[in-house]
Image 1: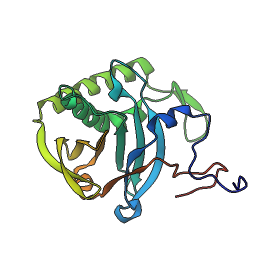
Image 2: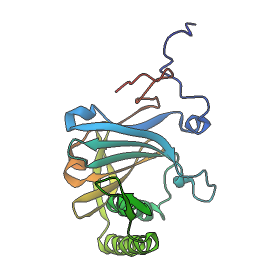
Image 3: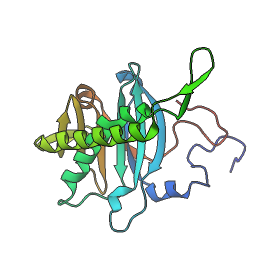
Image 4: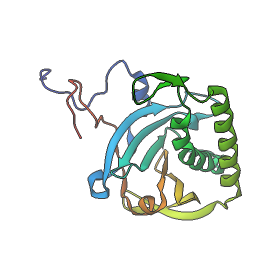
Length: 210
């Protein structure tokens, strides 16, 4: 076996969590067609026996206009009794993402490089929490849609929530499930497929593979 070239079928061996997702995971097929650039691929959440849907494989894309589209693969499908919670939490998270950058550092330099007091972090955090509560309340008021979403070119039953033109979709696959979030018009148009897990951002030698 040739060990000198890039081993494109292997993840960094220090990231053992990736191995738990061996098999098929979701991605946007040909992202550039939709003006998307793959920004991140990682495992998020915790391995929680009480909530197996908390651990997910994430592929995060960004449009040239700065909009975010995410495809998460759940290692196991959500139970029927928690599907609604999963899709509403995804919608709330997508709407709240811009808030994360709004909590300023305690001190920020001004245009002349002189440090000046920033808004009090505690106040900013309280504002963030208030905004989060408002977002969750708004998402909870929107009816859950029973719709269809195509994965691998095959329309399947899905659960969907759309708030402020941001959609979150939960769709089962063969033995897993996907959660897709992003601008509603893009979520409606992108082609989502499942393929064997493999690194796309870089290979073992750090070379870009986009």
